[in-house]
Length: 360
Image (cartoon, rainbow, N blue to C red; front, side, top):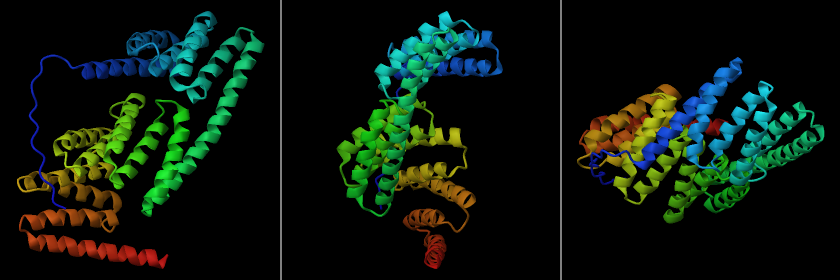
């Protein structure tokens, strides 16, 4: 399929730091302090853990009084105090973390159960057995319900994936909508909710329902960036899928920076030779594969093919698809002999794969 080349983006030099950059900087500082504090806690260095998690708390307070990251930090600091036997200091931190989580995530979230359990242990250490047992029972009930809901969600996701694979988009939509309904109960920032939104959006794209798909992809991306971090591979997936939607709509200038961000995240987190990196390279190549963009597209196709051959083996169907993509570019640039060679190899791979399927 021929695609018009994306127009080059002109980046203006802005001397002021954007609000989004400030948020990312705050999140990085918070995570740095918190991770260091947890590491110190695991090592038994409670004094260092207290210092570092207290610094993380200062950063977390900037996120807002109902942000789940604040609850996470309060909970961590409460555990540091409880480990040191300072139950009077631990109790209000666990209570505040619990209140935030109940409001932000819902009363049945797993994080709420964690806060209930930690507060219960604080009460138990103080000899407040009846109060501790009441909280423990609440935590156990949440965990039991959550386990059942997770199993139900998993079944809907699996059924939706199977329906999508066989091209039954109506059934895929039905199953993934059911998964979404279940995952809404996990909390507004739960990664499983982001997965449900992403899967449903992919189905809507296949059905040509672009406006609703865009809304779902954006919501999925926002959850993943907040819950998992802006450089998590799942965030890269959301960026890629949103870019694919824009490319399908011909919104190439909107797609390009999203593809590039997705590729940068995957290279950093998974390594430069991961199959997901190859998929991202292939998508960028497809974006550039137009007159005037062939020179940019070719190295992406070549690198994607090399990664897939190394990671999956030279006779994998994905390698055949990659060869066909690269061959289409070669034909467009007048290199028919080389294109034919790749097409022949791809055809042989597909034939062998078909024989193996029939044999099994």
